[in-house]
Length: 374
Image (tube, rainbow, N blue to C red; front, side):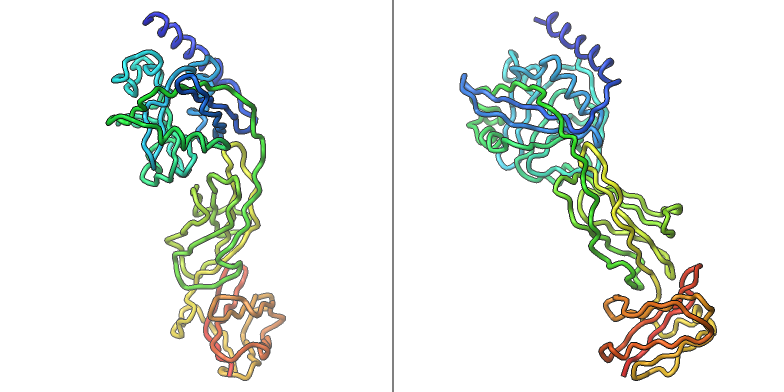
């Protein structure tokens, strides 16, 4: 038996070396047939993420190709957490050895990413060595946030989650081994080659204005989005990218921003098999909004009368400078280019109250302050 197992492992290693040259066209999908006491439990379909964890996906695919998983067991079931399987010891070995693995198996280096452990997530089992994953994997039946960033997510269930729920609730012993062996048989079933849509940005509204140097960016999730890539730059062409992050949710906090600076941001979706194009580009300002004493950047620009019934005259402005008026929520309610040294701004159609202005040149904000509409 030992010689047979060694032969199988040598075949696996040989296959993996040749397989490494093969590229996936999208997300490969597999059927996991489960059987207990000769009766079929059901088929759970999973898809893997070569665009997120290519090493683990290649390893799993190579094992399926030589029927490695067939007749191995889901040897560990913990209600409210996960089911684990894929250990070669579970074919014919003593139940006390299930989950211990075979030290001669090739291992896969960790691929920790922003992908989250959610209900239905397929992830790599390992021991204390972060690079010790091999054939064993687990499927979460509930979110397990404490695993995020510490275990390699490389797939998810796309159908048949009800069978996973049946398995996790199977009668078990004190070591979480099912009392009756639950065998698996895994086969390739096709590929999901869908390309995700770009995210639609949500907040902050494009052109919004705030003094805070830490800005929360949000967008609307895409149904098949696993990871989102966020870029923040100080130019609209993204030649000067200052933030480039991958996140597993639809929000990102851009911290450590500089005052008196205009920022541009965009996001794209990673569905595990393909990347979307980028979203629309939005922008926001970081400035000293609401600070009357902001003299350092006021230059010689004057606004009068202030307060006013709605007509404000901006003096000493260069032609082509942009004038923006914002309300207390940061919404732009007036936006125009200066036509000369003196420009009239009429916001008499707005409610009475406090507003903020910015005068912006091609090099950024050169003046800002507060105006009062009586």
